[in-house]
Image 1 (tube, rainbow, N blue to C red):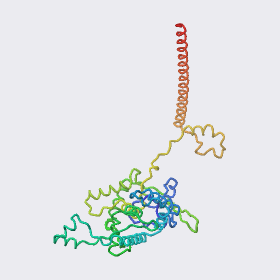
Image 2 (cartoon, rainbow, N blue to C red):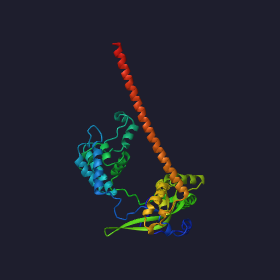
Image 3 (tube, rainbow, N blue to C red):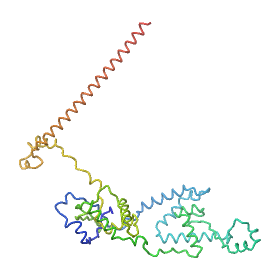
Image 4 (spheres, one colour):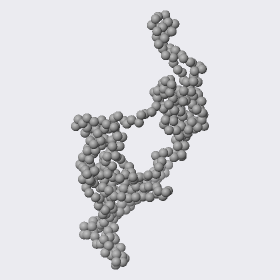
Length: 390
């Protein structure tokens, strides 16, 4: 919501928004208007640069090298191997990384087949005693063979389970799901289905739009805003400026507070609609209400008061040296009686404070001199007293 509008965005303003914002923007009032930061249209702004990617890989290697997975510390001293693996995975897509992980797990299951193949699950009851009963023999017959995994990673070699999970940045639950997929006989990445989120697609966006417009009508201010966008054409950056009217909400509000207020509004009015999350709330507002923003706290600062002393000095000391053609400028006009008396009062008070500080410093010096003299007299008196005793 706080970002600039897209430069390719063409406003398709509805009748209600025209009525809310109130006509065309005033070109004469654009000097004091706000300005929206630039929007960049160059391709690949959200991608990591090679330098950032190298730094990210280096930090991951340092973290993995210090990871105490077991007594052997499987990843210690393998910086070169980790760099080759992580740099390769960083250039993979999400599906490619899943297929790579599934292939690695499939090979791990083959490596373990020569050691522990088709082992029976061990139960609490001893197998010899279980075979003595019909129920025990039936239980053993129903047990499925357990598949073992000896964990290996490309370039790195053998690892323990914790090191394997940390290297591929997966949880124990995710590793279990991948292992079950390998046991079912598939290593391909499972497709998401390209379905929308079942909760977010059912959100009533019209209710949210009506609510935010009611809030903006109540506490918002219509302000002319200069929108700055930039495009890179043939390697040359070009900037474009346009003026439009935006609705600015008070600066003490945040989008999280508005989201909480909207959820409270739905509960209080018993509106049966899926509750949007904070990200869905911001996404819908950015799409449906791009001209409603929150005012920056810096815009709430008042202008500093005018310096009345400078006004008086400019009129009395600078005006005699100004050419006649510029003498009628409002800068050199004679200040009013109130401004003149206020300037003289400020100057008098400043001189008074300066005299008081100077007097206080002199009194402090005199006090220090008196204390030093009293100390010297005390030393002389003590010396004479000691001499008279001897």
